[in-house]
Image (cartoon, rainbow, N blue to C red):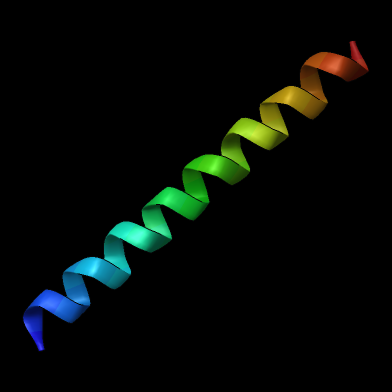
Amino acid sequence: NYEEYLSVLSNARELARKKDVAALRILSQAQ
């Protein structure tokens, strides 16, 4: 249903954001 879809979408967004943060941290450490 629609609410399920929205919650899955927001979970995916949250995971993507955490991945981006981790990637930025790795990049900043590499410099």
